[in-house]
Length: 293
Image (cartoon, rainbow, N blue to C red; front, side):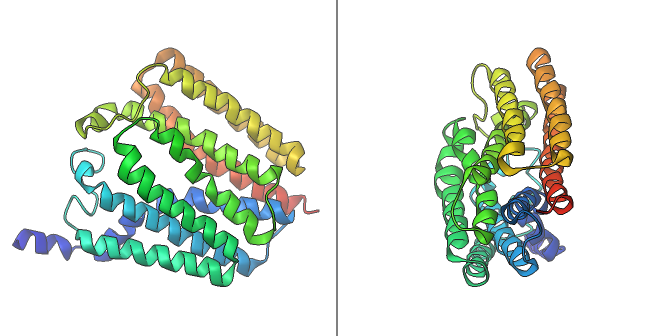
């Protein structure tokens, strides 16, 4: 008991921040922000941008916290996750659950009060779907959970779009499709080079056959979708050139993994995928600032 008490007193804010997984929140923020810049064809109202990212960030942090809460038993079995706040004893489960509830409620209320109801409803729906069907049920039962859950990550661009513009058109759907197509190779490459870790926890995260072909196929569709955004959203040469170069790199690493099938090739594609999505959506924002219409 004394050991547990000691753990709970170690850097509590750091432990709670770790529960929220800030690095996992960043892609949600930059994709939502990019959608807002594309929706207004320039720079969105600063306060609307701030509250959209604040509310959306809180909801994303709540989703990550709930994921840590419900997965604490399997996290304790994996080398990659056994030192997280819950399995390591730095945060008690009840406190983590309360923290997640508070973040989720705060995020939805901020979006509803300071942005609009549609953005709040989309965020709430994404949070509920991520926690209930995906985290609690699908993740532990089928490797197709990655496919089914890829749409959840596609919600931030839609939230960003409806925050400044009414209705959903081709551009926000393409922005969402980019995230959905990116999620699969990003997730499956992680599962590929962490295969033994997931197996230790009893999780089947990869298709039994043809995962490298699936990853390559998703990569091809991903690059095509990013380039379709150029005519659909009237993007300039900054984004078009970046999308082409980044896409070429993604395809090269996906094909390399397809032919080699090694954990090293999977790791390289996984690391590149993180850089890829941040750079792609970041260049969307820069392109809209430079070529304001």
